[in-house]
Structures are given as C-alpha cells and as structure tokens.
Length: 416
Image (cartoon, rainbow, N blue to C red; front, top):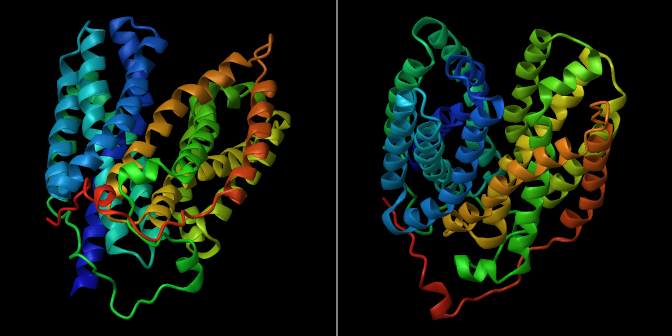
C-alpha cells in the first residue's frame, strides 16, 4: 500500500512542478508587454530575473518552514502566493514596479516555497531511486513552459496579456493547491519493503542526518553549491541568448530561431530525468564530471557551426546538461547530508541558481566581440567547464558518524 501511495505522491509532485515551471514561459509575455506599455526588453526581462532570484532565496526559508510545519502547509501556501502573484500582475497597466512586485516578488516567493516541497518529500519516499525520482520531479518544472507557452500565446491573442495573467494565476493556484494536498512525509525510519542499499550507495551516503548548521560547517556543502552554480551559469548563459546566437551563427530569421528555441528547451526537461537516472548508476559526482566534459566540447564547438540542424542538436545536449544539474543535485545533497533535513540544506543551495542567473548571461554579454561575435564568450565558458571537471572528481561524502545533542536539535522533521 505504501509503495502505491508513494507513486501517487510522486505524480502529484510532478504536476505541481509543471505548474511552477510555467515561469520558464516568461518570454511569451515579453513582446506583448513591450508593445502595449512601451517598456524596454531589458525592463521586462528584469521581472523574470527578480522572480528566479527570489525563488532561490525563498526556497531556503520554505525548507526551514517545511521541517517545522510539514510539507502540506508549505505547498498550500506556495500555491496561494504563486497564483496570487501572477493574478495581481494583471493590474500592472503602466506600472512596471507593480509587475516586479506581483509576478517577481510575490510569485517568486510562491515558486521557491513550492519548488522545494516535492524534492524534500520524494527523497524520503524513494531512498532506493533518489536520482530518478528527483529527476522526474524537477523534470516537471522543466516541462512547464512546454505546456504553458502555447496556452498563454493563445490567451494573449484572444483576451490580451493582462487578462492572461489573471486566468493563468487562477489556474496555477488550483493546480498547486490540489497537488499540495498530497504532500506528506513517510513515517520515521520508513524504507521500501525488501530494499537493501548497495555497496556503492552505502559508500556514497552520509552515516547520519546532518542539520543545516553541521552541513554548512563541512566543505562538501560549499563544493556542491559551487557545482550547481557552475553548471547553471553555463546553461543559463546559452538560454539567455539562444535566439540571437542561432540567428548570428546560421543567418536565419527570428521566426526560425524561435522554433529552434522551442525544440532545444525540451532538453532542459529531458536532461533532468536522464542524467538523474544515470546518476543512480555511476554516482552523482561522476555524472557531474561527464556533464562538464560534454559542455566543454559542445561550447567550444558551437561558434564554428553554421548548420541549423547541428546547432539545434548541440544546444539540445547543452540544455540537457543544464537540466541534469537540477535533476541530480537534490539526490546528491540527500546522499551527502541525509534526507531528514534536505529541505533547508538544499533550499539554501538553490541560491546558486539565483547568482548563476546573473553571472552566466552577464559573462556572455560582456565578452561579445566588436562585431557581435559570441566566440570569445562561448569559448570562455568551455574552458571554465573543463577546469571545473576537477571539482566533482575530488568531492567526497562527509565522514561524520555521529552528531552531538546540541548539533542535532535545531532542525525538527514534521510528518504531515
């Protein structure tokens, strides 16, 4: 019964992430907002930047709250805040600051609270398939734009961009709240019937459940933060300039480039599942090493390509690696620090996402050549990936076998 129950919770977590991942469809709103209100592309894009940064920060606080009040309370709050933020964006006419506050801040807080819940819950229900299950969960987030973008586009054409915010806000709230009702932790000490960890799993997993404080006192937490930051910086730099890069390299039209962007974005979702599944077999650290090496070769090759088909394939694989970081890192964190407090421990690690969302795109833009060439920027990212390969090779699990009473008291895990 428990086995069937955990798959139902996994499905609910996936659907929650699909609704939350609709934020990746922000580009659909960019042109309608700039045309209707005269805002610049940069001003409108700041809405997305604020939202992702707030997501990264609020995921930490959502993880702390989850440990105290349980996942259901946090998930329901996430649904209300996320839906409300998007709904309130419908009142943004001529008020750019209101768009930042509603969609960016309020919606971003809801996103952060919601994003951490399925991850923290499912690593407890699936100790036997940590990589695969967290990959499936965050794969839903990557797929959100695929579901939302065409729906939002049609709504914008029929009712306008502001009313579209209102309709989508209500829809997001309903989906996340309903899915949130299924979020609960397993009983303390629960494990799948008959499951025994393999020797490889045992060697790569912590002997105790770390608290946030003891995790931060280890060099391994900072190493995992850096792993996620580097991987995200590389992928998001390409995401931020996909259409211009495609147009520059292939001399194709904006419409064709937009179609390429849509195809390539599927890699973000697919990679979250594929690489997370692979990590269950070859370990998380070697998965990151392989992804880094792939990105080194692909980023180095990209500026020399002119074929639309080849560039699409190369970019697709790069975004698979980008998504793979998000699919693999939750299980990586649970392996090294235990599943009990993974909410706050991984929640704080997601600040790497926020910082990378600024660093990666800015690095690529600053290294643009005088003719608008992306070669220097893409080659620099390739070299960073090559050098970074050393980090996952040398990282190893923490070795503590006990925590004293003062260390183990602060984070309390609620079962709801």
